[in-house]
Image 1 (cartoon, rainbow, N blue to C red):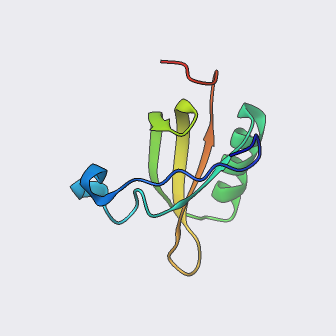
Image 2 (cartoon, helix red, strand yellow; image 1 turned 135 degrees about the vertical axis):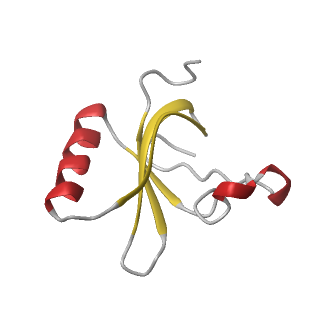
Length: 88
């Protein structure tokens, strides 16, 4: 793990049934709050449908704010920012 790359794996016993298709089998990109807003606008301009938004999602660095969408091949992607590392 570094400031730029985080690999966060969950065993099947921790998967949430209703979200199995999107979580945890996805790629997450951690960005700054400004970059999060920029990505959100860019997705809207390109008419890329968000599959989920969350104001409080737990991840490798604590609680964050996320949006999810699928790439053209159907791979789930997440863009997330943290207000403060490990904030509750």
